[in-house]
Image (cartoon, rainbow, N blue to C red; front, side):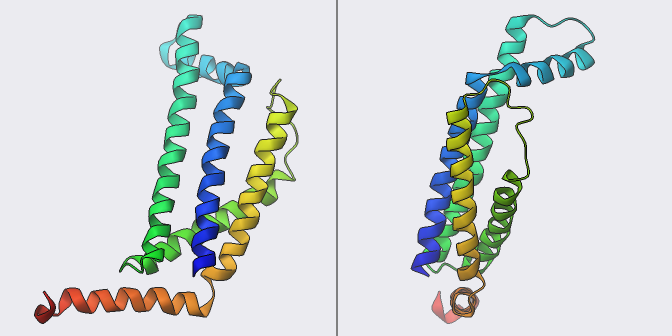
Length: 174
């Protein structure tokens, strides 16, 4: 159980680093995002859009994306804490981490099939570091899957939920 919790704490840290590197990539070369924002704003507004409006849209979308990513990571960290504390939600938290582990493994494998399309003039070093972080998160997620499907882990989280459900439903224990 400790290994699963340690792996997921590491995954959350790597994913937050990935979010920061993604924002750094947008700041290093916002041209691709600026082009998409211009097309979207011209379709909705129907007129030319000023460069200042484009800059606000680009940086706001990058910031919002990073905040959303960090919020998701905080939820995953909360699920990890629920498992570590053997909370009654630990069984559901184990399932949540299972689905995200599968996603992270698929994303890491998909990195090897993706070419350099859409990267513009983002520094190669930044892309290499970000890709390495994503691969490390995927490998850690694959290891976490081994522990998530371990019969001992399944039993441990199910027993924690059952124990606390008995405590909540038994009027003598309140």
